Length: 60
Picture 1 (cartoon, rainbow, N blue to C red):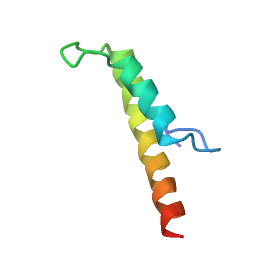
Picture 2 (tube, rainbow, N blue to C red):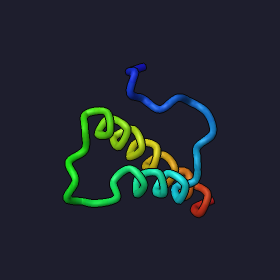
Picture 3 (cartoon, rainbow, N blue to C red):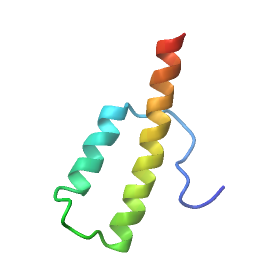
């Protein structure tokens, strides 16, 4: 498993992850640092997992 992969476990709701993304990137004109960019990428992966979980639950 790569060091940037989200850890296995419960998936947070997409709304919670989205809130973290918005807090990280409050102004689209701001250039993120390398550390912030890595955090953003991690949050995107987490958000995708959360939306997939929601879609599966709705389909069931």
